[in-house]
Amino acid sequence: MDADQISAGRERWAKRYASAAKREADFTTLSGLETEPVYGPPEGVADPRMDRIGWPGEFPFTRGLYPTGYRGRPWTIRQFAGFGNAEQTNARYKMLLKAGGGGLSVAFDMPTLMGRDSDEPASLGEVGHCGVAIDSTADMDRLFAGIDLGGVTTSMTISGPAVPLFCMYLAAAERQGVDISTLDGTLQTDIHKEYIAQKEWLFPPEPHLRLIGDLMEYCSHNIPRYKPLSVSGYHIREAGSTAAQELAFTLADGFSYVELGLSRGLDVDRFAPGLSFFFDAHIDFFEEIAKFRAARRIWARWLRDVYGAKTDRAQWLRFHTQTAGVSLTAQQPYNNVVRTAVEALAAIMGGTNSLHTNALDETLALPTDQSAEIALRTQSVLRDETGVLNVADPLGGSWYVEALTDKIEAEAEKIFLQILALGGEAGDDPAAVAMAAAGRHEIGPVTSGILQGIEDGWFNAEIAEAAFTYQQQLEDGTKHIVGVTELHDTVTPDLEILRISGEVEREQNAVLGRRRAARDNAAVDRALAEIVTAAKGDVNLIEPILAAARAEATLGEICGALREEWGEYRETTGL
Image 1 (cartoon, helix red, strand yellow):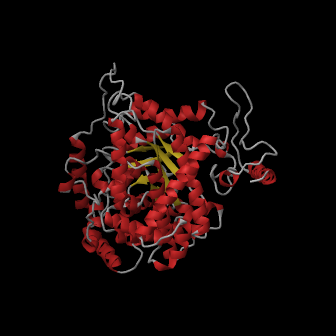
Image 2: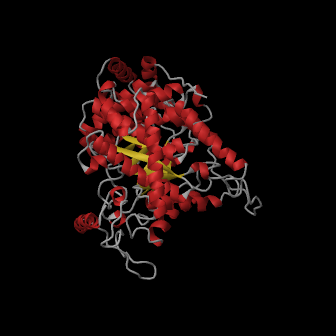
Image 3: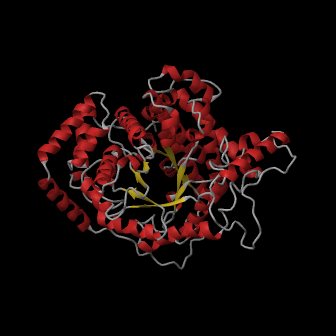
């Protein structure tokens, strides 16, 4: 880009910055030096990289979505929490909100994640252990008691049974007197990453995609601020992928959901703003920053050029970040505070929209109140003491960061070609291949490639190979983990960890039994029958499932009715 074009871009940015809302705050350094809101090439100097770098708030959004960066609004502090029963988790939420949290993020226990009731035999010993147990809408009432669902954004990390849980959330909001059309939050719902990495599915892929399509339609028409999909790379990275694989697999999943929306006749400029993303912030500081910057650039280009999005909002990649759980160590656990701080700073430098910081003891158990507070305060220190809010994309223009951003983008594009090839499409430019092949697939060419890759076990094999390579590097001393592969001596004593009493499961099951006895079981049976009828046809399933949630049908009953109709999925390993 020549000097005149760069100057014109700077002027465009300046106009947008001047008209944007900004916080009343001190944007000087600790020593009182003035900082500019953004930095770029010196006046009169050409820079061929600027086509790819751009300015904050301008396509291709490499430098962020907003011209103000964090001067307009800091990232949302959204701590992931859930354990035991609904009352225990409700108390933790109130503690987090009082301590400075800006939104809630719900962690569910394993039975809930698998669409099972707490009193099913498969749930034995798991109730409340890795998250909160939710069996019916009454548990949602208890989970959010005293918390205005119309005044707080809520993220729910669940995919397989996401739609029934969402309907329970809607029913709980109605019971609070909230107009559900005003709700704001995010439901994960990303079933592709379950087949690829996390393994918490219920049905074969096609019925899950139908549920997601129904949810996208329902939210687009009825709850416009709510984000029905959070496309998740976090679990892909935690399973052992490289940064480029995390980026490529996640964005490909996102493209698939765009194809799904388009196949339903939805307007991309209307539904695409309802898609959000969830990434891992790992320990390699600069690689993570480059990954986030490349993600925004790739997404914007594909949404505009391949899928026809015309508005900035439809081209924006908004993402939540969580620091890397897999980087935490049981050995010398206080080192985890350092790791989490570095990872959180990488997410911030990469322009995350919201952030969760892991607690130092999460490799051993769910966090205690003290470790959760330390994790929360880590974000507060970064936000309020380090000056990271002063400048948009402070590393933009760094020779290293820009080269690494380009390299990760190129690696992702190679992987897109592999995914398209799995769906029977070949070529050199993945975006061009996707455009040319759009009419040859029931949903779309990226979706076809993903489904074939799942069926063949290709994703499993790719991630396993990456994880094996890293483990070899640890064992031969090429890579290091402090306290694990080196520097083993320590004075740190064993931690006191949070333990979930078996009484939680016994009480949850007793409450569930009383709830079943007290409800109108005939109404529940009718509601479940309506779900099955709708599943046999092409009726949108959200309203029938919502009716069942209002009647206090349990999660296991709703998912069980759909399992009988659609069957269960068994994976192919590909190894």
